Length: 532
Image 1: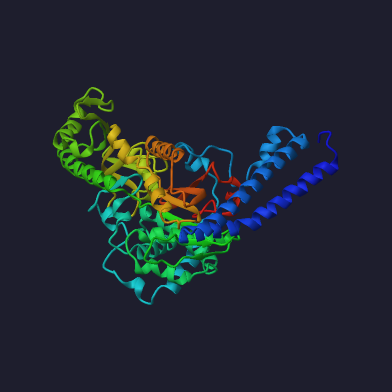
Image 2 (image 1 turned 45 degrees about the vertical axis):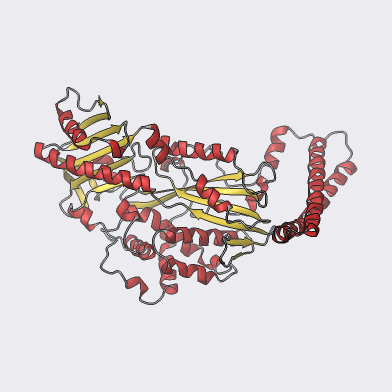
C-alpha cells in the first residue's frame, strides 16, 4: 500500500460499495423506464428515462474513478490488479479460437454421458405421450444398410447427411439412438449419436432445473414431440439455456409467444433482461447440395474402379465449384492417375488436382466396428477428430456384419474445394443468426444472446468462419432501442471416437459491448450448455 492512510483507503472502499448498491437499486428502474418510453413514446416517459440514464452514467463514472484511485493507493503491481479484475470464468489459459486447438488430446474430459443417459431416457419416456415413441416403427435409425454394403458412407463437415436429415422424428431418433448406445447394439448409428447422445444426456441431467423455470416449462418441453425436423435441436438448446440459468442461481421464466416477435426467456436478476437463443441447423443448403454432387461422382468412380480392379483412396482438390466440375472427365482422370509414375503425387488439371493412393484388396486391423474412427483411419487415413478434407465418400466390404477385423475392396474419395467462392460459402458466418436474435429483443429492453452451431469443418474453413464473424461484430450496429451487454457464441464439435463412442467438445466464445457491456456479467450466466 502507498502512503495513503488506512482510513482513506477504507473510506474509498466504502464509497465504492455504496455506489455499487445504488447502481444495483437503480438498474431495475432504468430498465423499466426504457421499456415504458419505448411503449408510449410520451414526453414524460422520455424525460424520466433520460433522468435515470443520467444518474446511472454519473454513478458509473464515479465508480470507475474511485476504483482506479483505490487501485493506485493499493500499490499492487499491474499484473496482480489485472488478475483481480478478470472475471472468474472457466478458462484453461489456452487460446481456443483456432480449430486445431479443439481436438481430443488438447481438451480435458469433463463428464461421461454414460452416467446420465439411462435417467435421461427414463425422463423422456415419462413426459412424452403414451405410445408416441413407438410410431414410425417402419423407419430405422441404425446403420444396417451401411454394414450390408447397400449404402456408401458419406461424411461432410464430419456429419453423415442420412443421420442428420433422417425421416424419423428427431426426438424419436434421439431416444432410439441413445437406447442403442446404452444397450451396446452393434447397429448403433455412431454418426447420429455423436450429437444426439450428449444432447439427450444433458437434457436428462438438467430436467429438474428445467422444472424450476417459470412460464409453463411443460409447454416448452411438449414442443419436442409436437414439432418436427431439426427444430427439436433448437428447442433443446433453448430449454438447456434456461435450465443452466437456474443452475447458476438466476430466476428465469419462459416468455409466452404472441403475434409479434419475442425472445425466449426473461431473467429477473441480477437485473431485468431478456435472453434469446438461436441454434443454426447442422448443414447448410450449399453443403447438402455439394455433398450430393460428390456422392454421385463417387458412385460413378466406384463403378470404373471396380472395372479396373482398383482399390484405394482417390484424392480430389477442386479449383472450381462442385456444380461446375466436369464430373465424367474427373472420373476418367482419377482412374488414369494409376498410370502415373507416382500416382500418390497430385496431377494438376484446369479444374483441380487428383492423386491416387493404392490400397490392398484386403486390410487387417484390430477388432472394431464398421466405419468406426479406428477403421476409417486404418483404411482411408481419415481423421475424425480434425478432418483435413471437406468430405469423404467410401465403401468397404466388411462381410455384412457390424464387428470386423478385416475389410476388403476398399474404395474411397476424399475431396477439398479451395476456390475462394466455395470456401466463402462453406465458411458461412453466424452473423445472420445474430441479427435474427437481436430482432427478437423487445425495444427498451436489455438482452443476452446465445448462438450455437456445429463446427466440424477443416481448420482453414472453421477459422475463416470465426474471423468473418469477429470482423462483422467489430462494426455491428443494432437498434438504439435495445441494449445487448454480453453474448455467447457456442461452438459444438460432435464426433464419434475410437470404436464409435459419442464425444462432444463445446467451446464458447464470450462477447461484450465495449460501449455498455461488463465482462463481469459472464459470471452470472452459463458459459457452457451441453457440457460441464
